[in-house]
Amino acid sequence: MAINTGGMDVAVIGGGVIGLTSAIALAEDGHRVRVLSRDAAGGTTSAVAGGLCWPYRIRPYERAVQWSVRSFHVLAALAERPEETGARMVTGTMTDATDSTDGGREAHSGDRPDDDLSAWYDAVPGLRRASVTELPEGHAAGWRARTPLVDMPAHLRYLERRLTDAGGSVERQEITSLTEAGRTADVVVNCSGLGARELVPDPDVHPVQGQLVIVENPGIEEWYVAADAGSADTTYVLPQPYGVVLGGTARENAWSREPDPAVAEAIVARCARRFPELAGARVREHKVGLRPARPAVRLAVERLPGGTPCVHNYGHGGAGVTVSWGCADEVLRSVRTLREGDGPLGR
Image (cartoon, rainbow, N blue to C red; front, side, top):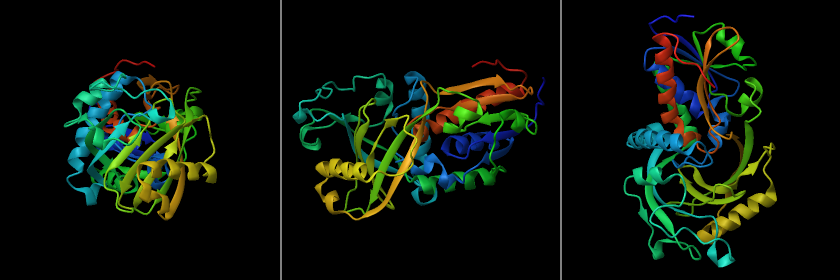
């Protein structure tokens, strides 16, 4: 099927950060874009995200780093207008989740973390090894960096405005068939997140449950994260304009969206070991989000049964914000290839 060489009618499925950034990239390139989403942006998993720009629970590493670096630079530019965009540049510390005083595995001792994200660490401007005085007691190594920290509810509102300004639209509509969506579009872009499990269907998509607690800020200005990729419990403290986001959990295949009081108490206790003033902070809200995980992100093109090309862009796990703009660039490149003719299709 040949596709016209002008701007195309594109249906983007999903109104979270992945769907909105993909839609913006396409609309600003001259395409006629509709975002179709069952939930308003504030009701998506993206709205629950802590908003730190840092790769977490995402594969494949090499592509994830490329996407993350691109998003880092976009978000850093947006951070020049924090009240408008919700993005700010904030300094913080990243350490391993294991506290060496508890007899656990020792923290990394090299100048760069001992994982496959080394290219990310090399790309972050100003990243350096933390000094002993900058590390929490019991942690042998960590890293200091100034990175984008995004107020996600505000950022999602900004993205929707930016899409509208580019001529796109957002429609509240539940999509139960990609093929059906393709009947009124030249291209479908599938950013359905966890919904892809049933919509594609793709049984490799599964939830990684994350619970967090939002408290009043007792004066914390820096972010702090202690997390290992495979740990079910993490510790993070993210100061946002609306309070401090305390986390968290990463429970594989847990579907409940109801906060667990015992888990919330444990989260506050872990965070208070790093910042004792958090122990008495007034709780504002409890939240639970389901990260849309997959063994690897699916960002590829295939032909739907009705003949319409579909660009899949889902399975970003806990790094949707971090890779959003990089993935949007790839979606745009795929659609440009399709516009020029029948581009390569693959899974």
